Image (cartoon, rainbow, N blue to C red; front, top):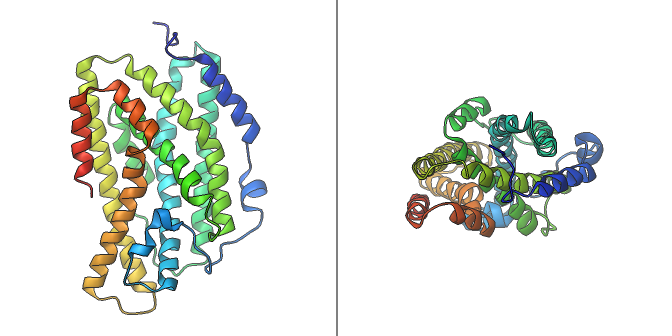
Length: 310
């Protein structure tokens, strides 16, 4: 079977290669540039952190919450890029003895994802130097990758497209226009966005190409797998919301009673569900691609599952 046909435009792979060459950057020379984080600045913008809804907190405490969430934000990206890279390396095998343009595009994708993982490990080290001890990020990237990759390729590619698209909207709509954020944090996600813009295109191409190989029965099971993956993501978010609440309560400099802690944890989880689930599910491009591949009933199943995560 010829893996490339009129439905999948080979020129889009070539355009991604050209863009990858044009925007390529180095972690130390281009992004960090010898700078450090400043605890007097916010890291994650209000539009993502929802700190204004943490109504029991002072302005300084809300800024601290933005820093905790910013730290988790970087760690989440480091986590998901582990399984995204593994899946893209896997699907690249289909081009090993075929289209070398598509292969180069996916190899560049993989190389950039490895660099992004290194960037986010660097961010964790830098942020740890400026914040109190005790922060936890318990999700193991390898274990999570193994669990995600146990699901079918369609489901993993759907989740990957969702993630790559919300990466774009988070930067353009919330991070880039905010003038109150840490300049270092903004630059980290500026450079991340520059390369992820190509990744989102490749995700769509590979998702649609793979979908064309499935039977209706296989696609229906794939929808089930996708729903289960979203549920697994939510499990990680619930655990991190609890860990980040405990960290805030232990390090904010005052007593946080049980009722306030419960409210703070609920708000952390609300923000995280928006950041990592709902903002991607609501992305117009994700909806366009997904609905072009599935039935109305399958769409309703996905919508019903998402509705439980509020």
